[in-house]
Image 1: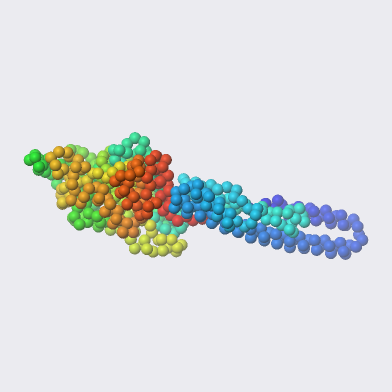
Image 2: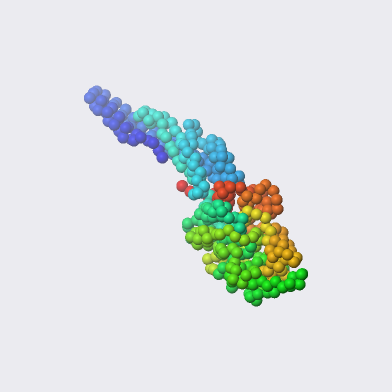
Length: 471
């Protein structure tokens, strides 16, 4: 914005006053008129020169401001350090500003809107306009980097959220998770889906996974009850859940994203009570750009059950897998893996597939009869005591080892994996699992408070899309 302070009007008034003064003396009128003409021409041409210098300074100032906010956004994406991002922005401005005196009027990060905004200002000297008492022009400009601008940047985003809703997440922890997940959705799902899409899917898990309306398409449908013989000679009967509650996959496709057909269908869960519903109650949500749909399910989360983290990990993958495209509704079908290697018109990857895995505990619940789809959903222990999946010895290994195998395969397919721990401490099996599952070391977040959890989800959201300029 130029602060010319109505210099044209001032110049006219001053020139008129000089003309009136000269008009009182009729001697040397030709000389006077010639001098006045020269003065007018000199001032007009000079003002054009000064104006051009101001325009050039403004262009250089805009370039410095734009590059500074982009630098800040990138530092934030890589480091999750707001102080460092601001330092980088100011240093970048100092290195690229037009000339002195130039300054940053304001630098404003907004992680809710996922923006970094800077206002810069410079003062341009005006040798010609100084003759009419305007020795400088003040120029200011504004630049803004939008991090969650994948749609404008030329990238389609597919994101799946594995969310721990086990019993240990009770109290304020489940509320913190709800807030964090909704923050990510607000940032990642942009408003204009006409050219490039951004969609999010939900994979809440505890003792099992509730596939909801997908059940008839993905789940194996065995008998309503099974009777097992324990080592002590007693019989133990398990009943299939009334809802579509699934356990771990069996056979050679246990650690793949093969389509859920035939023997690769998902086993149903068996429990001791024939009327027991699925734990968790919250269902899987295929990818969608409908924020209300996603938030409604998130708001329904209730903490209960055990930590079968390998099931959540598997479903975070399935929601992104093009092999499952025929299972999901039209608006939720994942794009082909081949698009991950393509570059769009704006120079960005045409597609990004991202899984976010969040838990607050060690993966310790698995299904021990995972030899056939018919018995895979039962938790009959190998010993005569205990009825929990924590006591099972699954043919595929415990929940932790299964999750690690799934992570390795998921990353090999081209999916970027972020992991978030919540109250895990600094060491242990769960920390090792999440650190190993993350695609890069800095993509593992070990949080201890609700604020840290929300910050981690926001940073993941702002790290997914390339920053772009938005003024």
